[in-house]
Length: 446
Ligand code: GDP
Ligand code: GDP
Image 1 (cartoon, rainbow, N blue to C red):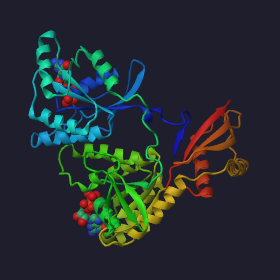
Image 2 (image 1 turned 120 degrees about the vertical axis):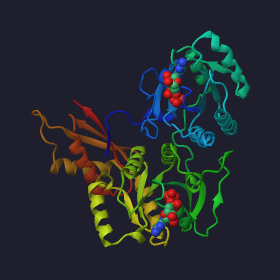
Image 3 (image 1 turned 135 degrees about the horizontal axis):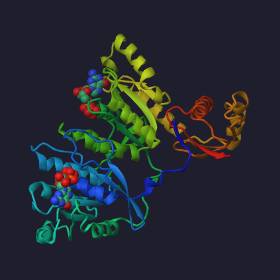
Image 4 (image 1 turned 180 degrees about the vertical axis):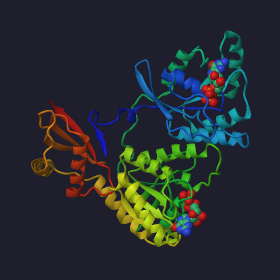
């Protein structure tokens, strides 16, 4: 359950996004620290260790924006240029503007050139930072960065702060003025993201679902890079499958891959209305599975769990899986579930009705009259425990949003989280919210 006592929506959703890209050691993380004005981004990450925090809040001249730091990835030397290009590609996809960092004291390397090619193709606004210009003597080296063909290089010293004001001004100039659309692409086919850790069968499932149906590649979005979404007809209805390029592309396992895969997964979840999280039923459920499930819940998307590779499970494994679901997945007991096999096709046809049901519940609206009749009944039958001689009470409720259902409860006194969980459980029993998170917000009147 997500309980928010304050804002209706996270204002960050509408802030513009700046992605910081560049090869390792040019000073990206140091520069991110400089931009966000605190030492929060981690400098000198341990190679191979994935950071869970990649985006930071930034404020300059009264303008708020989000900085996405791609500095956490330390690559092997092998195939580095290609890997860095891929890193840049992932980050740029989700950004409104790109801050490209080069090391003025080293000059332009192949790895820098690889990023430049990606940046040119993306057509996103780029601000070029020539870093490590700690004193005026290095200015000439910074000027040599004009050769990259990306416009004016901003000479900065991330370490000492030199030039960072001008750089921030340039970043603000590069950002779009309008807030990000919160609900882009309203209408049209329903947006489905198939997500999950590597090798669970995402691409097999997509292929089985698409079957021999004509797969319509969608160019309408006007993307110049490879088309990321596909319109697929499933059982007579067309769905938009999000970021299928990321699913179909067999990215070689490489250091840092998981980190960018996770960025990509987050992007897909954000754009979807419903997420199908694929889990390999034949193997124990892992932390990574749980993290992906949590991301879906936090993003407030409808959730279907597909336990794939059912053909590989025997009775013992199924008994154990039941225990895992009760023990580790109890937080997602509200999710819709299907046991299937992408390979044999078993129960793949059950997925579509389950997706539709989850979407229907995600968009469900409960009238204020019905909601208050229900609240009145549970308040009478199960009053909130008395605290400090006072009896906190739910006075009135209303559904503020759908997609996911979000209820505002007006109360007297502070309602405890345990009681809110109870209310959520009863709401689910009464109105059936299978497959969707439910958000409860409290407005307390003392
Ligand atoms: P990243 O891999 O691109 O994120 O680079 P880091 O931020 O981890 O920096 C790599 C190294 O360069 C660290 O030792 C930093 O202290 C150093 N560094 C970063 N910015 C500057 C700078 O402006 N001047 C100097 N002299 N060193 C810097
Ligand atoms: P992805 O990385 O999540 O896209 O996974 P893939 O679709 O590439 O599948 C990974 C491997 O699992 C491949 O060898 C598939 O043939 C296999 N696989 C996928 N689904 C099933 C299934 O339902 N049963 C079995 N036995 N194997 C499967």
